[in-house]
Length: 406
Image (cartoon, rainbow, N blue to C red; front, side, top):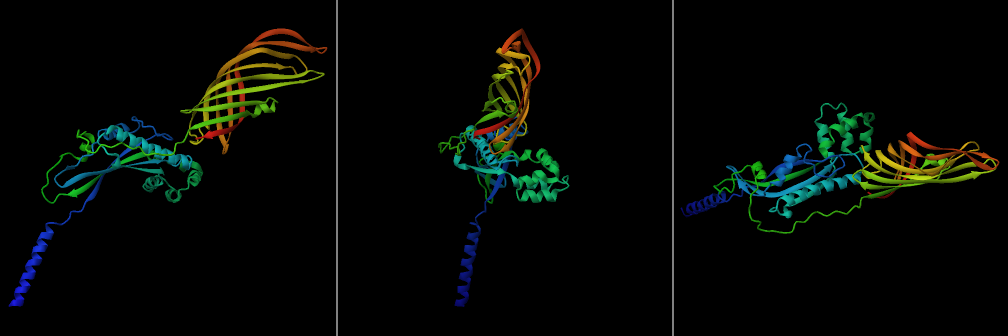
């Protein structure tokens, strides 16, 4: 009987601990996320509200408040915001890394600027660079792409050059137009700790996640601290090009030019040429000197690390004097002739710091000149005229040496 009594005591104690243990079961915490996506234009990291749904998303970020709230089933505790920026796979690797960082930083600064009660310690940044993973996901579900498996294999090994060559460039153009734009984005992932409610708890807020994101809760900032912006190496963006027109060289006319990149796809160039040759006894003359100044606008798909590449258009103004004779009737423009016009061309990168530029200029040239004849070792003046020329004024096949850092 005594042993049976011991057994009852042990069972009673076990039932007591089990009952108390069930009332103290720790409820596991899950993560709830709300993702916002901001789009960017190719090779840019400036926030553009008019692009896609950016205006709506930026408004949500601007009015966001990091508050805890509850509904009938869960309690939501604000955890953090993770901001990650990506880029599409065109252009050099180093530029895409910079582009990814700049896009991330743009959203980071935007969130801190418009949310005074958000602690920077709860903001995390991630720089993806080329977002090969999301490109793989897009291609994986694409039923239109006939060579999808081959493309997936190339994307999996991150081979940009092979991606450009596949199917003679047809596939790359399709990806460029359809798949690359969504990769030029930054994602703001808002994280909440999600705890199931197993006992009555006071409800802090009765808002949904999206309502919280759209309603500014004016609460005092309990722990104010200085907002820290993520730092990165500073890249001074400047470039100067030294140029030589090879067509002038063929005409025995030394020349040199300098072009300075101004930013925002604009550049300013100045060119000068000088030649003074004479040969007796037939008096073979070749004298010319002058120059021009030119403002260019660059556009199209260009190398992000070399802004002075690709298509360009511009306007120019020039001055020139000349004396051409070659043993017959001579033409002497000993006073400045001047002109202006427009030009267009294309600059192609042929080396690490070398470009080859093709440009054609057309416009208006005017000035006074004299016609003369070489007679008995003298130059006999014949007539003075005014030149008014409208048409092609300059052709360039220019070797460009690039100097600077981008």
